[in-house]
Length: 124
Length: 124
DNA sequence: TGAATATATGAACATTTGTTCATATATAGT
DNA sequence: ACTATATATGAACAAATGTTCATATATTCA
Image 1 (cartoon, each protein chain N blue to C red):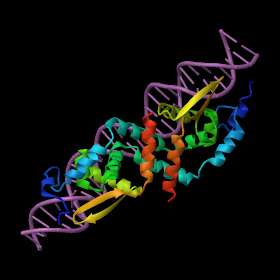
Image 2 (cartoon, chains in turn orange, blue, purple, yellow; image 1 turned 90 degrees about the vertical axis):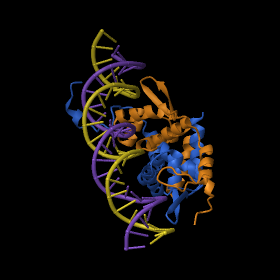
Image 3 (cartoon, each protein chain N blue to C red; image 1 turned 180 degrees about the vertical axis):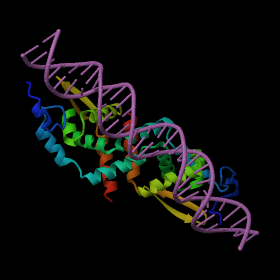
């Protein structure tokens, strides 16, 4: 039983000698570029932390200053500020300054769509 | 002015005294439950790694066995197997056994939607 | 039954990551 | 200029994470 694999498709590499070369080739062709994969991983890494998710949810409700967020999440100003820097670097939030206060808000709508999908997955 | 006595009695969640309470309350009401936030972070954490993104892209092309994936990504069977376990635990992939070979495939369509949104964000 | 093979997994290790602490910067008011 | 305040940031530390190595498990075939 060889799972419909032609003998020409077999090759000896790795620990296995049953490799589905046509399937591997197809997957290789459809795989996005290295740089895209890296950027996507970096983006999702940002979403992979409750503090940052909380911040983004907060900002989806309204723009907020650093201290408001710290109060809301019951965390230090420093911790929030560090996280906002990461969110800013990922182009997920933008800010405007008003005197001593800096107001942060969401950059675009991808965040909401991604959160909706994520929410829908975990709620299944 | 010289009253340092009260400073220890203050509830200092942050260093600010200009807090937008209505905004904070609104954000608090709209914030999903702790458990949801945790599950979402765990889900996105899974996407926050190029190896796992590669695996998921590969499986979106076709179901594949562990060794195929290892060959495609030029990584050890062990590394792939560990990652597949995480993906399985997150209900992102499922598998079927055929003899000694285990074929993995994607669980549902949320992955594709999330990837599309992520891709679209990083390509801006 | 025993050898070969595909996959799974525990432990160890190096790397990454999130928070804290201390301190720096920026702005406003006196 | 000086003080107060809102935010930013570098360094340090603990916790989490991804890969490797060795080995275990599961299945097939002789």
